[in-house]
Structures are given as structure tokens and as C-alpha cells.
Image (cartoon, rainbow, N blue to C red; front, side, top):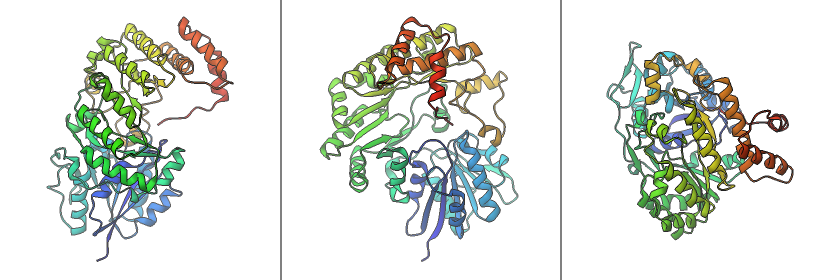
Length: 472
């Protein structure tokens, strides 16, 4: 039997993580019935040409779509595919169509179906219906165009236990390409889906309804041991929203790594309350198994602001987790957010103070500061929209949405300049420097100690000499 071809595309962006979403849905398709081809606009040469060639005789073209700059490439490639293959079924999944299921189809006629939330089971049903000439009216978790051209949103699909899905097949991509672009033999892996928490600035509660499901530790150990032998990676980057959700599970995973002698480092996401609840010997076990870095979202140095954000953590838990990591030389990224609507000056000052203190606790600690931008799906965004804030209205406008690199409407020019200067000097003050940048570090440390960030001559000179990475 001739296999039917399914083509999947990952749009251009600035990061080189493996396309885990596409790998997940592609691995769920029956390999006896379907040939899955993944094209990645970030690492493949002439990706559009490769996509068009692959789509010849294909039955379905799928795209993972993230709000922001990647939408531009996603739209460009989607239109090119539809122009050349007008009868080919085109499906978009990912964060943007999960948040804008009907608007995605309304704004882009080349898209036939959008998928909401977890896509593995949903995509299998879509592809099978396409292959068999079936209808989509009872496929849960999608929005689609019916025969009359109308847009129909079906019922949502409940979060499925990820242990029922097949092992992700990394042979669908050229893993070595990602090692090359990362300049590191780092293996990307996701062991859970969803998030149980209720942070009001985050879209997760809207998309996953605070559901969470995770792979069993034994399965993870078996899979990672297999891929370690095949690809010889030296680090694992867990892409979970909240990797440390269950303490006993993390302990079991660490034991799997040690017992299987994986000999790899790893990094994952950790809430401060999760780090606080880990026993000292459990922290030691994680370190022994290879834990090298965690990401602990702090968001604010003000407990009042944390409570308003419904972070459900205490500032004391942040410092305790930091202490434990510092004692074990575990690197930590502590992200902060400023510029929330109605945020007080005291809250901003508390955030800068906390970021400075955490940054000074260990040279492997970093405290990046981002600006709140009303991202669709979050409770805060719903509130500000109700008060008259205008979100982007079209795919084109959302493709210009920058939720990392610029400030939101609640940050004055003076506050923006202060925060940008603080970010520079705080980063230089805490990070390990080479012999050439040691003098700059001494100046930065003095500025931070004196809380003096005016006349940032060193910053201007440094940024002129050292190109800064543009994020999207």
C-alpha cells in the first residue's frame, strides 16, 4: 500500500529548539499509512522550496503558529502552498489558533482548519478524515470551514493522558542540525502538557483549563536512554510549562537518570513553592542526576503584586529556592515582569531590588526583566480589554506583536529608560566576565550598589561595540 504524505512546517523564528509540537503530532500518525515530512524554516535551506516540493501528492499540510513575528512566515508559506495546491487541506495548530480559533480562519482564507489546545489525537482524526473523505463535524478540538464556506467551531477536546500517545520519533528530523545551530548537543524533550496554576498574566489557564498530564518516569528513562545512545547528547532541555509539578515524580526521574547512567546534564522549569517543598536530599539527588539549571518565574518583587497576579508563591520561597540552588551551583533564570496596568512605583522598586539581590547571590543566576504586554487568553488581558484596551485585530497585526522586546502602554518613557539601564548594569555586575570586561563589571557593581543609573555612557559604548540579539 502506498503511504499518504503529510507535510508539517515550523515557521522562521530566532530560537533553535527542536519542533516538539510537530514531532508529537507526526509521531501519532500511523507509520504504515502515512509518510510524515517535517520542514523547519529555521534550520532547513530554502524551506519554501522544500515545502512546495514535499506537498506534491500530499493530503495535508500542517503549520504550528506562535503569536508574533513567526506568523509572517507562517502566512507566507501557507499562501504559497494553497496557491500551488488549492485542494490540499491546510491545518494550523499551536498557541495562536488555540487562542483565536475562528479569527485565524476569518483572517486567512488559505487555512482550512485550526486546532485548539492539545493536538495529538485531534490531528490524527483530521488526517484520517482527509484520507477517507470524511466530514469534520464531530472532530473535537477544531474550527473548520464547512461546505458552504462558513466557519464552524466544534466542541473542545478534553486533555488526554500523554502516556497513551506513542513515543515521539526524533528520526522525523535531522537532530544533528539542531545541535549545530545551538552550538551545543542539547536534546529538547517535553514530558508533560498543561499547567495546574492560575497566574492571571498567562494564557495557559485559558487553553488547558488548569489541566496537567505527565509521562511516567520509567517511560522517560527508557526513551531518553534510547535517544542518548543514538544521538549522544550532553544536555536535556525539558520544555515543560512546569516540570517540577510533582515532587515524587521528579525524584523518580532523577533516580532513572542515575540508575541508567545517562551521564547528561538537564534543565527544567520550577516554581518557587516547588523548590521550597523539595527536601534537601531531594535537591541533592536532582543535582547528582545532572540538574544544571532551573527557570523560576518570580514576576514581581512585591508580595502584594504577586498576590494580585495569583502566583500563589511567597517571596521567602523565592529566596529559599535561590539559596538551595546557589549552594549546589545550580544555575537559575529568575524572570520578572514590570509594567502591569496600575502597578505602583513601590512595586517596580521592589522588583528591581529583588532582581539585584538574586543576581548577586551566584554568578550563575540571571534576572531578566520583561514588560507586560496584554497577551490573549490571560485574565489581566480580559480585564484591560473590558476597560477599552484595543488588542491587534488581524493576523497581520498580531504578526507585529512583540511580547518580549518592547514595553507596554503602562510604562512611561522615564520608567522604560530606568529599567533598561538597570537591566544592563545588573546583568554585567552579576555575570562572570573575561579579563577585557572586568573593568566594566566593577563599574556596574558600583552603580548597582549606589542605585545610580543616570548617564549610562558605558552602556552606550558597549551596545555599539557588541551586537545585541533581536528577539521575536
